[in-house]
Image 1 (cartoon, rainbow, N blue to C red):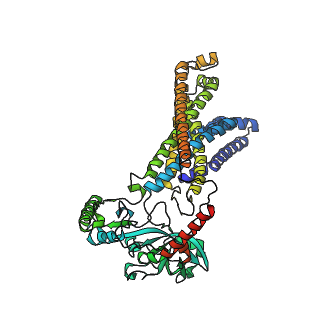
Image 2: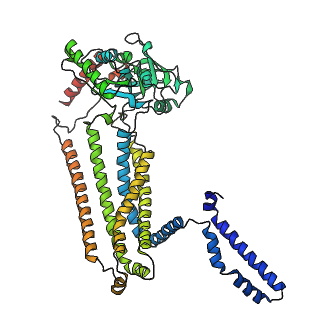
Image 3: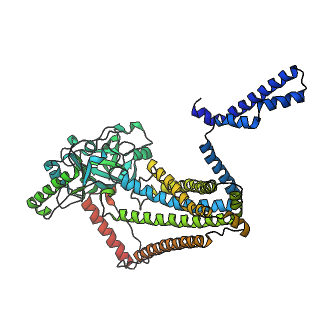
Length: 555
């Protein structure tokens, strides 16, 4: 019989063994009665000949048991009964640990999503980014002169009023080089992408590729969307395709609604991008097979030095490459802020563990007589320590589960955090790596705050404890350890409170920064006439006139 049957069918097997033994006894009794014995004499003789029925049943069951596994399961069942008898203690311990575990899961999920999770494109490890924004002419020079990349792409972030069925709303997208999707190696969910062959000069490729989420949100995932015309700042663009479902661009915080060819960007936003001083493009390249990052960095540095000699606008230009996104930028203040949050989260978990260690030590001291009696009647110290550790591990697992659920709710909110109408998203949904970290933190926390009560039991003098109605052996050392735990807890909490006060003070100072005007009674209005299709130069004249009229009315 397989291990599965042995695990889930043991009760039926035990019942069948008992029935078989009783049937054997009954047959023996009938045979003895047939020889002339009375029923009482036959039952006595049969049981005597058969032996201890209970012992035989236990021996037969041992063939279907895993003694160590069942002993551990029994410890957890006993721990669960003890916790159910003290619901206040159990709830307090679980919530305390849940806060510590949940805070760390949230922080690690953010670090995982930003630093550890690769871009959702084929072979993301071969993508590199030029460390700073570049102009479009510089991008073309890098593309034509490099010897390290199979292809290079460029894109910039843009905003426009997108018109769908006579309804206009503000949206954010990217103007990209024609080879954008080809270099990334993506396949569309629907339709097709634009390519470099579609570009034939300014305003020559009025095509648009929608993101999967924008397609679902604005077009109800209609497959007939390909071929329809939408407007960007009143300029018509034909929808040619839908991006893959899990592709959100190559920025970790910005998820574009659409992509258009760069040659058509000027007619939408009014900016002339084809001059070298306009450095607003992010440039990425895919390495050739066998080329290392260091070789590519040296190649780009050499090209940038040559460009600095050739073009007056590029004087002093020096560039290198790094991994794309925040993970490759060690100077990114957002990364430093995340690491600071991780340290604070670990301090919270440390405070929670030291608090629980003190609580469990006090609980073990309150149960000292019970535990001493169990030692006196023959229980081994290891058995009692194992049962106490089962309590702590059970608390830690439940607390970790509650904390992880709490973290998932928080992450769902943070994932769609945005500033004004800027589509700022975080790909921080928990994955297998996050759940493994949560399990590891839970188990480590349980062992951490379970060591002290285990140490108490190991040093307990059972006879002395029963006499004095308390655990006396090594008591001064235990109190010293508990005082040390209290010191750690106070120190961790002091650091947390101080950090929170510093952050609040910094925020208050930012809010009180002088604006150069008296903000009382002043209303800030934002006007973007390009959404209505008014050319950039003309829209600036109109906006200036509006502001002048507004200032005169205030005077």
